[in-house]
Image (cartoon, rainbow, N blue to C red; front, side):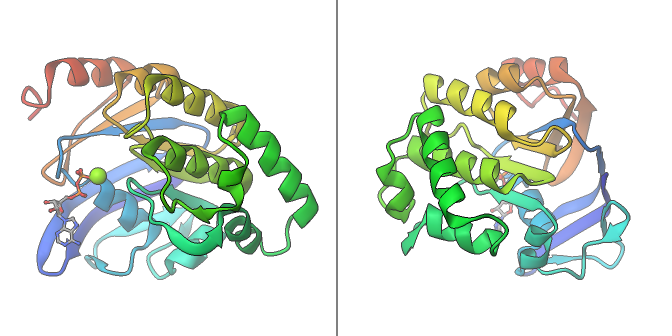
Length: 238
Ligand code: ADP
Ligand code: MG
């Protein structure tokens, strides 16, 4: 169980998230929707502990009873939290295979990892060369998102956030990625998808939908709220 209580987040001198309280149960799929600039990516980054985001004293983040606020992003990742960025940055000279070897820190035999990655690449339909090239360097939108999905599959996180995994991906790729994640993410993981894609929402069938507006939770609901909001826009939600 992951709990957010009274989360108020500031970047520089700008308060971006205001008093957000949400519960995320293990094994559930959550969709976060909201207009551009509503604070979705900032919420994801605050959960992961991005160092330039300051949380108010009243803000609480707890993970299975453990207080996360004092933990660095690195420690949160070691606890099993994974964020797939909206625009993942290239790391010249480091391949996804090397990155994963380092993240797994000896927990998986490199030969086993090497084989697993090739199998996953075939399954998600991306050429093997992307596993050994510098990560995200010159990759298309769709290729980046497939490599992000492969990382999530290998790391088997207990809490995973996909920030617009559908952006820059064509319809077939969105379907492929959604099916891949359904097959490979741990069943008891909390899965949070930030998305505007009705196609992705239909494929992942969220248990809970959170609508963010101006850095606040404007509405909570189920699958039907997501579809209605995507169809009718955010103006009807206050
Ligand atoms: P969304 O992901 O919902 O489109 P963001 O979380 O990216 O929204 O942004 C929310 C608000 O915070 C926007 O007004 C944006 O300009 C602002 N913001 C995001 N990052 C920064 C930053 N590093 N410095 C200042 N303002 C920021
Ligand atoms: Mg965003």
